[in-house]
Image (cartoon, rainbow, N blue to C red):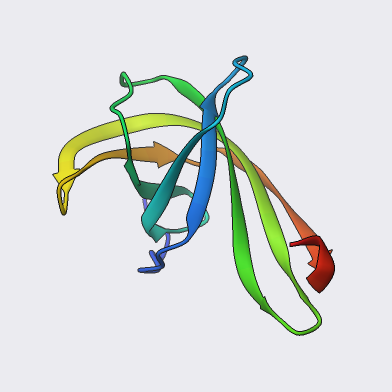
Length: 102
């Protein structure tokens, strides 16, 4: 199986355990169409279902917001002193946004 290309992008994201109301916040260490390594404030159990939202940088014309669903696949410990989790992105929607919506 071929692995998706990972991009070393530090993007803010928010995520939550599926079904919960409260969001947690983190920063991507790298991201692809199939997953992300995220620096977070807390660890999550393996196989925990998550929803996530990432705002992709754009131009003066606008950008995009990624709304995804996946699960925690690895808990590699810490990266730069922050807790980290790896999450799959099993499905996602890419929503184009006008610059004033970001």
